[in-house]
Image: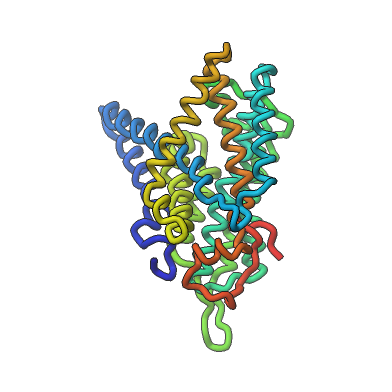
Length: 353
């Protein structure tokens, strides 16, 4: 593994920084320009569906491969969270309105999860490239991703025409509690913050030497993640056919592999087939089993999906902390302990001190 890469230049550019995602989206746009594009779009739809199962859902399940009692990533807290989510899931079968509420909460949570992961990887690339991250840069990086997150949340909490009204064959509740100008204002602030963040990284001469810039692939990944939420709706519908699997999901699988390849080589080698088997059992088998108890299959699918995703979100916020020595050793093996450009408590870049 090169010093500035998590796995390798090819793997990082394709599966972490958005190369494969943009390739698929480019093919999608090209197909739309063709007179008879039904076959091309059908093929791309199949690629999207395969990605949902083979990458998106497997990345959620792959969290279990990171858990370890030795580094406290598997703790009483994580087990307690699982019990609470299981209880909420059971309640959904007795309260008809609850599954749709969980799906809405999931969509509100998604931007935080996506952007936090990208922010953490961006910081990781900077650390590996020996790029100093000042307090000002940290502030604008966090502000930019948070403003984008709040914008998309505002979209879902207004009558703004950007947000989805249905998800997983379930009609979402209408929570139009905010005026539409809030989303519009946050959109403008998000773009302003992106500009300010970019300017904060301009090279400045210090003692005759210029400060180093973050790697280009790190910038490409960060901008890609922000555009997933900031582009117009007519683009987002097509983009989100590929983003969950071929950008976010593939990122996470690469991180898991990088973290466990030394400590758990056999699991790292067999991770994809193992995660796929678990994903099929959890996301398909479990809902089908539940539906045998007079529960609509659509309801069972929504409840299982949300509960597993929430467990994934919460667990990730805990187990990827850079303050944990095993995480630093696995992801920054070429970096000495003395290098401390920033001190984020978590890989997602939150809780700076």
